[in-house]
Length: 364
Image (cartoon, rainbow, N blue to C red; front, top):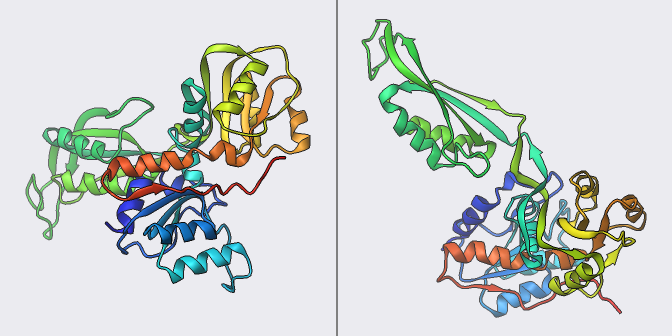
């Protein structure tokens, strides 16, 4: 098993193109062609995690948070970041991070929280735009089914909960090949008319290259005509946060007490109780205060996240209940999510969850 075999599985679930601009997800330390003896999964890759990896014969660490966010100009071991990277390099331990790209997929970090607190009918709270493209091609009518199947195979044609979506129209295409061509239909130097199907289908933009490759491989023509358009559509499967519903509505204080237990946190900071029932719940793993306006606009009864600053609590304006459960606490189950992604594909491989608690915050 190679490092790139593992990263390919993770990136199929959470493509690197979905990470935020400030992020540094991906392979941070190591070579993608190195053999992997074992994998250690954690939230934060710090020195003690590298020590644990060495002790358990794991030469690859998959963390949620990148150990390196910005460029390192020196490696002198003067801080925990440099010391962690140096120790990993010395001991041939690869470090991989799957951060905001895992936050931004529908079944990602926030979905894991929703499982813990029992939400249903979940959808992305703030969907992203400009992540979809449309590919249009033309082919002989009797080749259309084969070409559609080839593009669908790599992920084209998915819209929400529907797959293999396309629009098809029949018409007549014309072309004339010169002396250097070997056309599959028609004759060299003669104008040819061919009954063709125009196929249109939507594709996540990061899969355009793979889709074009499949299209060309399946197409009978020597020169394949196709167009790719960037779409402005909102992509409902990618974005920040999550919103869903409880099976049964709950009193605010009862819900907060259950939240404290379900998320195994020592502290829940919250705004004034409003005397409302909790039914619609918005949430975001990590630092999600930027989503408060979206939670209010979607008429959520409560917004759960971490890292709210003092003055940001005033922004609730008695229109929503804010519940700050802490950054680590809101993401602590992300390790389970990463484990499930890897273990589903490689069930007999040595994959283990860290036994270390890397939360830097303590409560008295």
